[in-house]
Image 1 (spheres, rainbow, N blue to C red):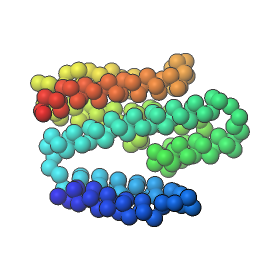
Image 2: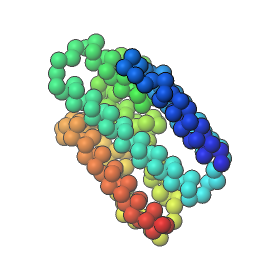
Image 3: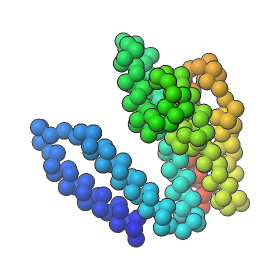
Length: 210
């Protein structure tokens, strides 16, 4: 009930905000996206504080980390593509990288880890391989593996195998190997394999349950 009320309140307020921003003189500013983030945090908090720790809870968490990994990889990929197009200076690159970190709520984690100016290599290393940063690919796949181990084991073999393969590359990979393949190509390949994992979860769990 609390989860539904949170979603419904968000929907009603969204409709009210939509009416206010109609017209050529109104644009969506950063405060709107900050509100979206706050409502997302609220729903997540309500969910974790109220729902039973059974299969629906596990699937909510699994969906969260699959989508989070996908979003992180795509954001990094877009940043890489724009940087490779050229025309940016150090100042422009600094603000772009800072925006990348802020967009995944990892700016403070970066500062705590490196305590230095924002560097493209370190941003990539943090968001791909760091196992302690909640938005990193490594962290997300660690969580996916843990959740899959808590679901019924008579199904889901393909999902667990795909997750294990992805996680092995993240646990034992290095930035040098990523750059050998090309960062953008590496991230695009990760997105494809992550989608394959999500599809395996859909096929082996959700379609069976339905």
